[in-house]
Each structure stands twice: as C-alpha cells, then as structure tokens.
View (tube, rainbow, N blue to C red):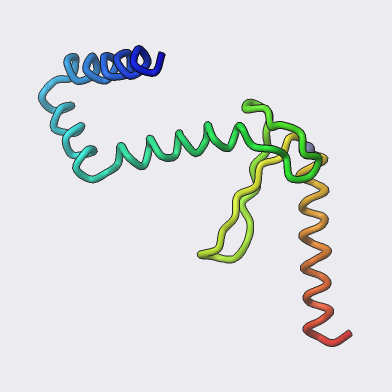
Length: 110
Ligand SMILES: [Zn+2]
C-alpha cells in the first residue's frame, strides 16, 4: 500500500516537473536549494498531525475541519494549542487569564 502511494506521489511530482517551462524549472530548482519545499512539506505534515490531536480541555478527538488554534506564550517560547470547539478555547483562555492574574497578584504581593 505504501509503495503504491509512494509511486503515485512520485508520479504527481514528476508530472509537475514535466509540464514546467524553463522559468518554472529554474524557480523549482531555487525552491529545492533554499529548502522552501521542505518548509512547506513540514508545515503540511504538522497540520495533518495536529488534526489527529486531542482537545486539551474536553479530551475529545479533534475534527480536522472544525478545530480552533491558539498561539500563545512569550516570544521564542510560542506554544500552539488546538481545540475542538469555541467553548473549549474560551475555557482555556479564561484559565490562562486567571493564571496571569494570579502571577500579577503574587508579583505585587497582594
Ligand atoms: Zn474540546
């Protein structure tokens, strides 16, 4: 099964290459050399994997088309969380906000 998929994928890519003109081929070569293709492939793989994840709030399996994504955290430590529904996202954001308020209270000593 995997072999058939691999051959089909290779055929798809070959087809794109075979139908490309000179300028497009130069562009493709440039993208391969710069690693741009790898970034696209990695980001697509990440998308697929994230769709198989579990909602951190209600623990139900995430639906690929209907999940919500939240990026949060300080620069350099950005986190990405996926939620099954808006109310789960809302609950999570509320919890984050509560933690933030707590930290602020602890800092000021009140
Ligand atoms: Zn949920």
